[in-house]
Length: 415
Image (cartoon, rainbow, N blue to C red; front, side):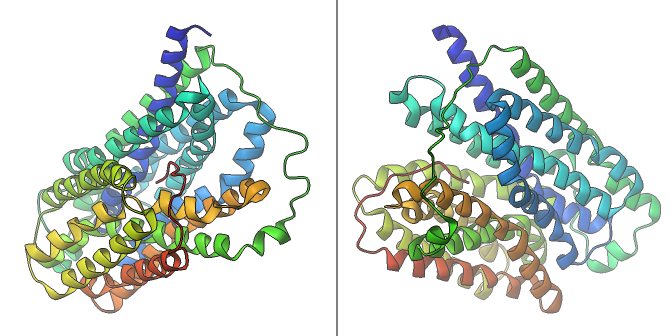
């Protein structure tokens, strides 16, 4: 493979990080939009996140087996095709205005994303000179951060309404108005599906190197029983569960919280969420630099405490000040996933692969915590419900404190 071909291959694979970042971060738009279009409670609307993250949990192992048998390139193309099918299913789902159909489409699309993520992270790490692996994976992950920043803007522009509707106004919408709301997702997701198919075609026609990294002796001596006995690893699985759950809940209900606390319109709230996710992306870069001078564990402890305080402030304050407090949370979430992940696999040796698989499965927290927040919101208010993520950050704080003696760790890419 020539240098020019290698750069082209890296660019194509890097585009995958952007694609699944768009799909994932559009959930924060779908939650409030489908709540109106399908006349849902907060608890019911939270199943948007559940469908998406449950797919990641379900496909993690099958995707790994698929890629092991057929190679990275075929695995990536398969993931893109499934991704596109899920995106196209939004058209009939919107036409029927059936929430279960929307969730099915999301599950299929997320299954494609999960397959892509399983393949792309290790593939780009090995696609080229080993000395440049860290640069390539961080460059690719930066495009995931760009997607997190612009997805709310795209969704707000093409999907959301200009008005902040009250419960009474939503209940009074006519079937025609509800159908109009539902139809708003058709064109954006058709465009996404076509874009994904075009990338699939480019990758299929590109002569990507077939990287073989499996060793017949890998993990032969490692039993799952011995992996489950690793206390720090199992605490880390809980940390990933609560982190991803908190991230999904906070971002997905942000627009709803903004409506409730300050009567901010959906479009304006989407723009504010985009700004907050820009802080998340900036936090990744700033945190990476800070960790060269300060212990990552101490930064993790500090960020957990700050996020608990910000969420408490959001409960205490009123109007836009409460919304601004929530906007600050993503910045301090930025380093949590890679730091918790790295701390959890530290010192596992030959158990690392199986330990990493358990940690990835912990992402299912994104399917659970939003449901809890939605249920609390229905029973009380969205303001009270935003206290739920405090429990998540408190657990991560506990995990960090158990690792207080760790000075330096190897950072990994993450959500």
